[in-house]
Image (cartoon, rainbow, N blue to C red; front, side, top):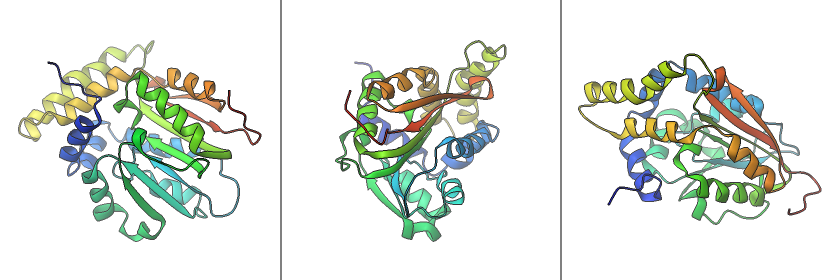
Length: 245
């Protein structure tokens, strides 16, 4: 039987094993673009309204978006990081964000199975977590986003994407499908988990289908492309006078 790479426990295993070297490997293998795209994700998110806004970082990983989020919105009251991988969160708090711990709580859970309260978030952000879901799971995530946002709440989610139509797309895909596994075999002694992340990325396509799912849930959504479509994002707001579609 073939393995289900979208099974939550499979995803957890991949990222638990990746966690100790994830930050360095992802930065080097993306030529620093992942960090640039995190900044652009935060910049693309509409400003939360109200004092001391609180929200979620879904599929939070190592929390590398938190410095950008707190720099742009220093009045944020709290961030709840939700991720299935305890290894990724421990890495975040040990290396990057211990001095921000008073503003950050962690929920170790499958996001789609979590019991996040209805209308509890002024904002929702996610960077590079969408690829770990298939289409049915994306539909569940769209429903969760609409349910958890307060009326007037804002969101932005970004993911590495397939730049269809770009003349350098074959080189980009060669980098994901050939070079990343090769680098991993040479530098990480045969590990396969980072190569699996490349598989998730190429399977994902782009965020346009997810944008339509969010619109179907009644959210105002803008679809964004970065660097010829090598990353795509969805950003928007839950209408203040929200009615379920």
